[in-house]
Length: 148
Image 1 (cartoon, rainbow, N blue to C red):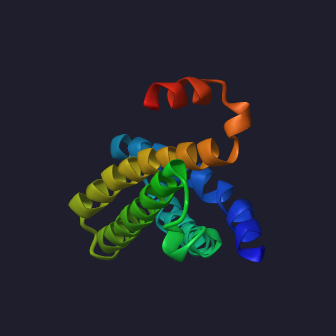
Image 2: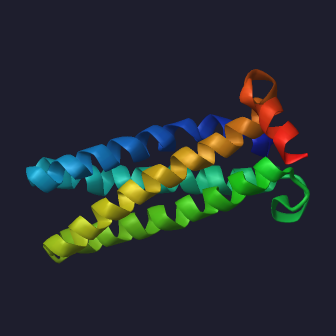
């Protein structure tokens, strides 16, 4: 299925970019230079665009309407992925507003939101990886036994 293939090839780039943007953003709180602003602004938009492709292709690849027929792990993956995408949009738009209006508070808010996005992206990756690689995770059997 083309949408599943597209989802898998587009998801790693935004994962790394989100973590890098959060790190550069935290660094920019100490040393606010124009290069950091430029990097966060444009790389943030690129990350949001690629995440949009990842989210749409993931929804198209999910079993059932909007992933409703998926497993427990896949449901968490979908919900947290959508949350990460929304929060990432808030971060990108907030930073853009801060740069355009030269407003430090909006930029600081956006950096905080990028950090929240990083946690959401890591969680999304965890649930997606748990669904895809169950046979390679040794703790899965123990957790399933505890749930039963």
